[in-house]
Image (cartoon, rainbow, N blue to C red; front, side, top):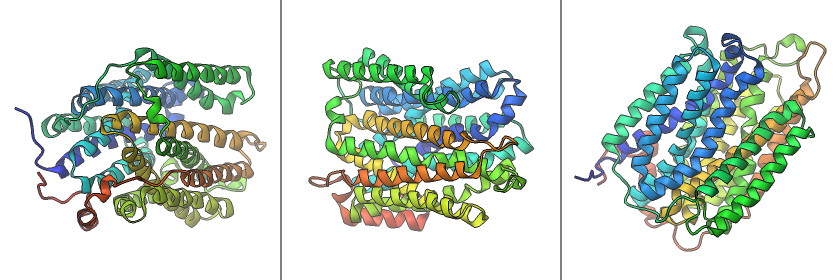
Amino acid sequence: MARTRTNYAATFAVLATAALAFSLLQSLILPAIPQLEHTLHVSESAASWLLIAYLLSAAIATPILGRVGDMMGKEKVIVAILIALSIGSLISALATALPMMLIGRVIQGAGGAVFPLAFGIIRDEFPAERVAVAIGVMSAILGVGAGIGIVLAGPILVHLNYHWLFWIPLVMSVTATIATFAFVPESPVRAPGTINWLGAVLMSGWLVTGLLAMSYAPTWGWGSTSIIGLTAATAVLLVFWVVSENRSASPLVDMKMMRIRAVWTTNLAALLFGFGMFAMFIALPQFAQTPTHVGYGFGASVTQSGLFLAPFAVAMVIVAPMTGRLSVLVGSKMVLVAGSFFAAASYLVLVVVHDASWAMYASTALLGIGTAMGFASMANLIIEAVPAEQTGVATGMNTNIRNIGAALGSGVATSLVIRSLLPDGYPKEHGYVLAFAASGAGLVVAGLAALLIPRRQGVSIVEREPHRALTAEAEVIVGAIAFGPEDLA
């Protein structure tokens, strides 16, 4: 017998747990890489693959599995993904050597498709007046997980050990797997067709070469032969991919969909938004951990530097549920514009004042506000622009494009920081200032790009029943959760 939905709050809680498990696996490892380098007896370059392998796997899996979910059923695919996420986490948790841990990290990357599939389930199954709220909170979980992961990494490493960086997400992913199978019914919307496997291979190729180029450019040099070669390969594979998709009767990513003005302009803003925001997670902890005798920094431990990012996670939790109502009142486009400028203001604070703790907390809080608004509005803009059967692949590509921007922005920020060093090996202060300024500039341009997004034509999902949408928002704010506790079948 087919399962029917009886409790939307429970369904959302299951999807949110799955998404948070993936987000934590992405961020918990960042502060731990230096320690893992020594514990596993590997070089800094080798240890960095614990992050690179994960990002590459997620970049490839996200749009492909999003498309498979659109075709075969999102609930089936999300259960399979969560099983893979659990297996990958178990392998990494048990690993005592880098190769085995890397295998686990690659398998974990499949979890990146949790977000587009969750967006699709929400769009297909939730009441129209609930969609904007749910998408807002779900989108924010990626940022919340990033902030929480960096805050928790220090205490885990100090009081437990690196294995717990994977045991904790493993418990969450196993719980989400069982709960998804038990409580999340299959969405009825299907996209006809088959997978264009040539397109999948070509897309995987240009994602791998492009992300490798951006990851290694700071250390190899942007003008090195290897980086130029990887960049050229990316361009060639990208062209072949577009041609293949255009000629395919059943493309992996429909180029007609990608050419919709609301889609490509939102993706452009996503690229620039990603460029700006993720440098904070790389540069600010390093800045805070710099010993005070260098002339700047706070001499903070891993745990203390992570606490500077706590306001980011708190701000996202508070602001994310409000973005649905803002979208009803002023439209998702203006929410994205405002979010971009809030996030840009966070870097302005750091450029002007970076020698006081309050400035660190203020800047990360502003970034949290801007990120909550930006992530939620981008997902809603894509959903408003594409047919229901393309939700998974469209939101998956938007996530990927934002991550490409993040990789590029992190690479540029790292290059600016390390391009000049003091005699004791620490970067000069102005390198961090330039990195903060470049990231802020990227976010300003993201806000300007968002102005190119066209106004919606017709009635959007959240505007079909605005009085009920506002009621739903009130439930979120008062209840401090995405949905009211009552059954809404």
